[in-house]
Length: 354
Image 1 (cartoon, helix red, strand yellow):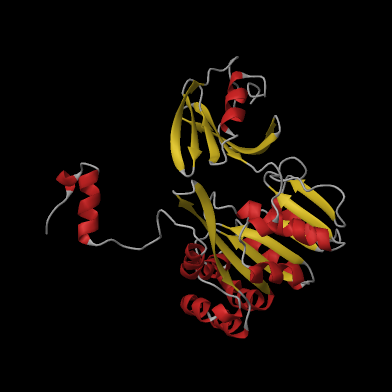
Image 2 (cartoon, one colour):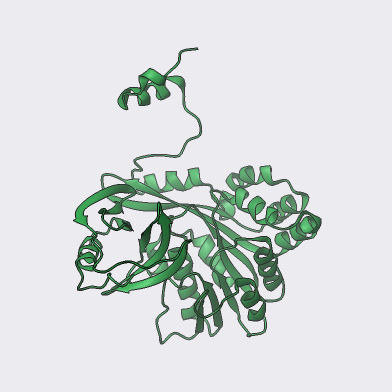
């Protein structure tokens, strides 16, 4: 995207909006208003992007990172109705200290003390997974003398110099062309910690398990909404003829599953995280070996005294600390709630009384 630099009109406007701590994403389309998200809500700016020269682009999507002034953005370029559109996620100016992210202490302890095994950080898009992982890896890298090898698409955070560990960051498409071949080769590059940006397919899932079983700490992300769903989603990626062995390997290898959501406190004008944490106690590992995934939710709540926690308990803990979530997650709605919503939106004409 040649038009965007800190002295261009578009770059100047984006840098100005990026000063607002609530701004997270930008949507840029030629000849349309600059659009951005602030605290999870979409806004249309008065600035209209007018390219300085004809745009050349190919069909499909492209991922990369971009530095604009002193800010970094994760970029995905797509094509919509024959025109390019860039979606740009604003990244923190530096990797935040883990103590500022409200990560459960038991999760930090499990990751820092792990000598091998698989640690998963999960959540929806934009829930802060990458930030949490970067903070956890940096905390470990500052405490140990290890080789940390990352595979990212694209590289989002750059680790600072002067730490005891050696960090080798690899960007897919720039430093490596084939993700799975690169991950297999990583086992011959003497890593202690391997970061897999995202588990996307069965081959990656199996290689990550293999690395975790052979003395490496593997940390990866998945797009899931709960710890129990994460176990099922991970194992379903693996072909059914190898599922039984995968269940045993997963139960033996996993060191923690941390799921994260961001809620909004309208009073403070800030978002804050809530977490769900599943740890590898004998009862949990036994359920995974037997395929009793539905029982994991109940085990989460029962294991609170051992460091595990559910989202519901995490929300209650944040509220006890003074946070006030504007919305709380729920499943299903009463009939009067549906009608009240349709009334507010002037859609009562579609409401059919049975």
